[in-house]
Image 1 (cartoon, rainbow, N blue to C red):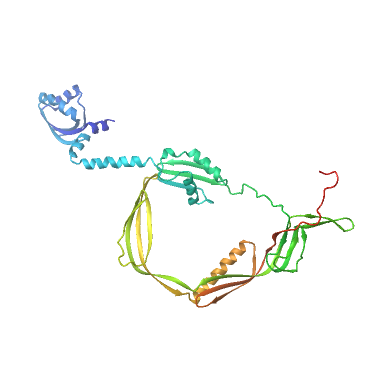
Image 2 (cartoon, helix red, strand yellow):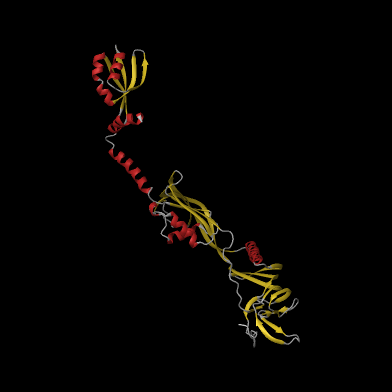
Length: 409
C-alpha cells in the first residue's frame, strides 16, 4: 500500500550534505516527515521522501545547517508532467483499454466439445435459429435455457453444459450411443418377391407360405414367399385363409452388372512455380487484403492460413488475420492415358465392392472391363454374388378370411 501511495503522490531521491545530519533526521521524525531507504556514503546520506515531505522539511534544513540535492524524481505526477505534450499518445492508450473493455462484453467465439454425431456446423446452424451467434452480448446468453433447448431438440444428446468464459461460449455435450426409440414394426400383409433373377441357395421362412424352394431359378418380380396363409381342417381341405406379413431369410445367387460412364477428356492443371504472397485482415465481417494484383489476368490457385486474435486463453477478439499464397497454374484439356483409366477402373471396382459388402452382399467373382470411344469411357463391372433377396410387395386379399367363432367379440 505504501508503494502505491508513494507512486500516486510522487517521491524524490535526495542526497544530504552538512554538519548535523542527525539533527535533521530527528527534526523530520518530530515533524512526521516520511523517509525511507536511507543509505550512507561517508559524510553523505541518500534517501527517499515524498514530495509533500520535501517541501515541509525546509525549516529543518535551515535549523540543522544541511543541504538537500534532488537526484531522482519518481511517481505519477512526474510521469504526467514529463509527458504533458504527448496527449494524443495518452488518449490512444486510454481508448485502447476502453475498446478492450467494450469487446469483453460480447461473445466472439463458440466452441463445441463432445459432439460426435452432430458436426460443429450443424450445431452452429441450430444456434443461429435460436438467435445465439458470435457478436451478441454475453448477458443475453441464458446458459440454463440453452442447455434445455439443445436437449429438447436433439434427443440423442443426454447431457449439456454451457458456460461463458472470457469472450468464449463453451458448449459441452454427451451423446447417447444407443437408440432411444424402437421403430414400430410394420404388420401390413405382404408377399416377398424377387428383386432380381437368380438361383435360390437357401430359404428360411418365419412367416408366410413358401412359393419357391432352394435350387429354383426365379425371375425378377416372382413371388418367393406368399402372404396368404391357408388354414386346413383334419382332412386337409382349406377352410379359410389368413393374410400375414411374409418374413424370411433368402440367399440368392445372381449375376450383377454395374456401370459408370466418364468423359475421356479432363482438365489438367500444372503449376508454373510462380507465386504471389500477401496478407489479409478481417474485422467485424469486413475483409482487407494486401496482395499484388495480376495485371495479366492469369490463372491462380489461392491458399490461406488464418488465425483469430486473442488475449490469453479465453479472451477472443473479432479480428482475424493471416497470409495468402497464390500459385500460378496453367490449365489444358487432355485425354486420360491407359494407365490412368486402369487405375480409375480399379478404384471404381473397390468402391462398388465396399458398398455391396456393407449391404451384406458376398462377391464370388468379379471382372471389370473398359469400353471407350473418342469422347467417353465406360467402366463395366460384372459380378456373381450371393446376397439377401426378397422385397415386400402388396398381397391381394383372399376370397374368404378367417371369421371369429360364434360368441367371440
